[in-house]
Length: 138
Image (tube, rainbow, N blue to C red):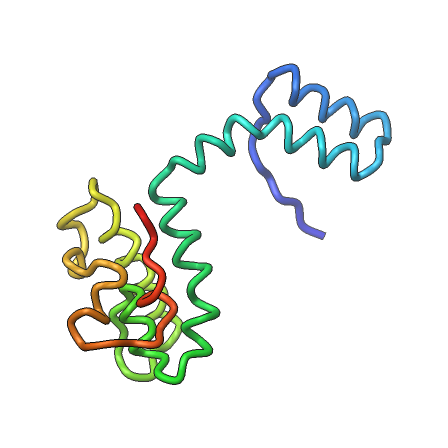
């Protein structure tokens, strides 16, 4: 079996408590609760990180776009410019470009920097895409 290395934990009292719980054989519930409390400050910071927020928002839209009757148009409504019948690399590239385009400090970094999520439906009329009806406030 492989190991996943996460780096060093912060040496705060709350993280030392998590380590102590694991060393003492605490239940998974106890360890999970202590971990959530220990990570709370960093999780609050992450919630304000524009790149993470935009990435998670877009990831949440993908299952809905996959169910849309016009997959490519639904992706475009979310800011993902893809060719007809896109492959994995097309989706990955478009996803990265869409996130970059939504981050103010990345303007001009990608070819698709002028694309803004949700703008596609306004240029082409009404859409049934989830991105056309829900616009993330970012």
